[in-house]
Image (cartoon, rainbow, N blue to C red; front, top):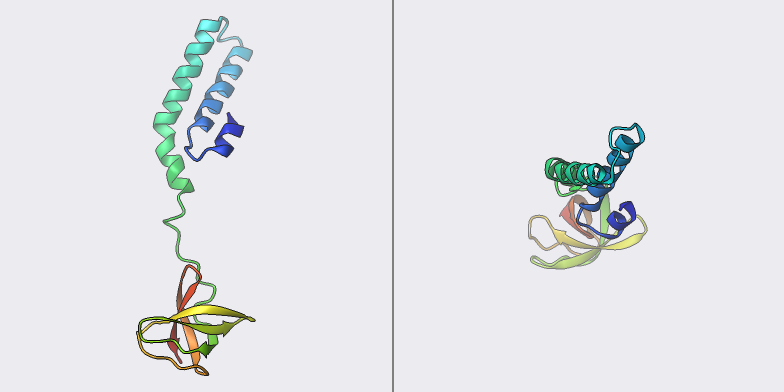
Length: 129
């Protein structure tokens, strides 16, 4: 079940694995002696854990609530290709070329120094310094 969970993105199989583990522990200590009670226990534990814990587990794994990656914010860079008013240009930062957009929607010409205000994926939003 745990291998199936690694392949899927549904976050369902882990609860069946939990049901199987709990059922095996109950059978080992002698609370579930016959096959019918083990099947019933597995079903009930799996479904209850799925219903009760899935929403909480998805919230823990959801990365949309995390703050934006901001290691670059506040750093300075050099414009190597003009950044037009409503378009992308290029800046040179940490030994690489990056796509850049003007924060104020103003023209920033090549050779200007800019400050990185934020990131949008691999595009840096910059303001002339």
